[in-house]
Length: 388
Image (cartoon, rainbow, N blue to C red; front, side, top):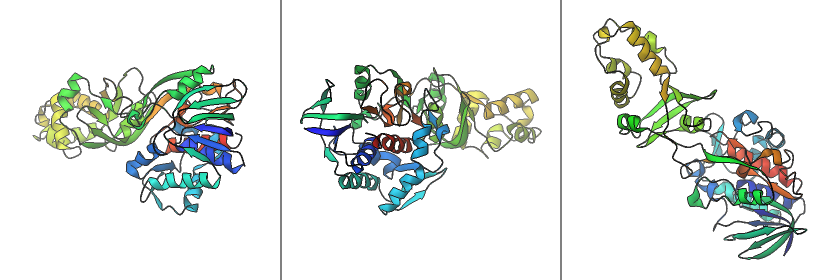
């Protein structure tokens, strides 16, 4: 069968591209290997889908070329997707920091995309596995549901995160097959692991959350850090994980709103214990383990000025050196991917192979936590959909 365009991948980017292409009167086929569309959409945001962020801009993305995402993001903004959500009368709310969620269910976003695809006469095939892609003249896509021919082939296969949902390296292999460079991939927005010493000290604090600032490689994020049985998670840690390199230490400010030295100095002539002073501002269980790990608690009047300065320094700059990450199984996204130097920033088309497009997470563009990756999916899918 012959189509104007075949989209491999029925996720956020693929469906956006398909509906935009179909609206222009092109015949479009979407091939999805899973039994249903948008599986990653369905689990996102705790089942309510953090579908965009009103503050999304180029500064919220990591890429080998930080300028690459500018064109697509400028031409399809959060306001554009919000208008689509409102058109379908889906109630939503802003949670914090510009993050928009459905009031009820992520299914509503998938249903929105399906409805738009249906209106644009897009054909959808589920449980369809691509075996091989060749390009003698037009693209030939061989699947377990038959062979399809197309002039334009859009790769929207996502990254390696959430392998349980069927994530594979297919998109990267296809890019390499056609001679495109693929940058090294690694888990992104991912929990970090304790080393042996931190595991011994903090491994029993699972569930404790602290408002903190996490910093690494010039980036800083203030949100909660969350202790797990194996390491640190929570929004601040997931955000800063994208900036971690070679397990270099992360600096964590445990008292972002207070001057720790001033606080300690004000109590230095009392017989109050250090642990009791700190427990006024931090969870008690954490304070007990933190003191045992770094500064055994005793009456404040038994600490020297130098010791108090060191304690204050650690409270504002706890150097946490991760022993690794929880890997793709727990990663929200994949860092790296198809090198953006291989693609047109306006259309997402390969510079080497006419008619071949890479959109969404498979390309080397990764957003922050909080709806930014969905906005990239919408924007890159829309950019390709205007020209496919």
